[in-house]
Length: 214
Image (spheres, rainbow, N blue to C red):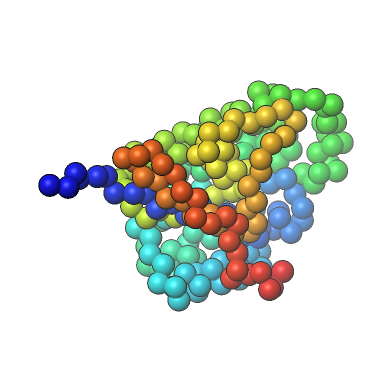
């Protein structure tokens, strides 16, 4: 008889659509900016694409921040799938930088010539190592669910550290090292095979539903 192997996990990581804070070039962090009109159009374009491609998800998991939650709602409604809110998928808590432009942030807390992954961000916010640990917790929590097709709607900072947790690369000093691009409503697709502890990264920064409109 053939060995009964665990089914794979199919995980899609989606960054939210363009928000008011994105359009104003603000370091949003956990500031709760909603989508703007462009962001809603992006989310609808993606929903239309996935519907036409007959893409299926068993569950949508979303950050509770408005820009992610609204993106998740638009997609979930089009695909007729349930949305679950999980605060593990919040964007980085960037402390006193929240809602500021880069210029305002530099004026408030001048940049240091060198910082480690263990240092705070924005005075008392999550440093790279702390965010990496939370992303690892989000990964672990996701894999404690039954194998299924999951869509996670989150934020660029957290999704980057999630990818680092997947490939086993810890944060480095001064923001050095590998970065994963997640533009608004771009997504990555991953497959995890539990019986082999093997990850396959199928797509990165896919946003063809919007590439000719930016």
